[in-house]
Length: 260
Image (cartoon, rainbow, N blue to C red):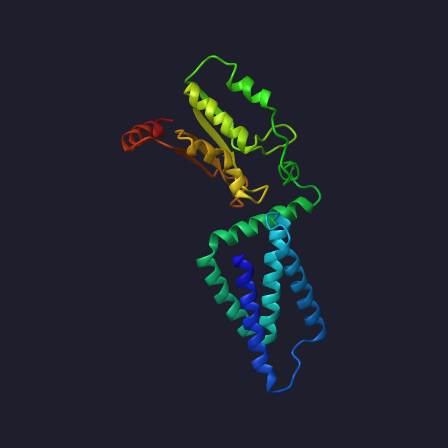
């Protein structure tokens, strides 16, 4: 795990600097409260590093415990508040430029986990657990795509279920079967994708259906809604994408969009 090695390398570097700084004065820089905080954070970090990192709570524990260890060691190394703040500010700028997307995902994932623990959370938060909702039976898919006689229709799909109590999430194999049936009958697939990865913390899982259809050679329309991913509830943040066969087709589609 690259991030684990990065944390370990930074911790080793800080410990080496602390050893060099305090070796000459024979001073023990690890006070009781600081040592307790450091050991607790390191223990949590090690446990998270050997657990299933795909689970949101494990990801949050791994990174925040690693950050806490590094921050504690930095404070031991530089106990002056001014210089401690300056170095942290410079590090924050560096992380923002190099890992902005990852940092944003981590903050959103943490926010989602916290809101699930709060009483009186909005229904669209508490009703969307990280567990996989139930999958439709094969007969349900065959009813939709196998029994109907018409062809060259427009089909609208939810890329993934936001409410497992009322909707179903097909497995990857079922999406591939659906893609095959859609292709045989010449249908045009449209996808509605709201808040990709917001509830599960796994954007890859949210994009699974779309990638299956694109890999199978479909030309698709995608309506992505993402205001919650950006923390902009109450605003309209959407992106309409249409996958076209060539530049000529793309220009024709683009000419039609402003009229609607």
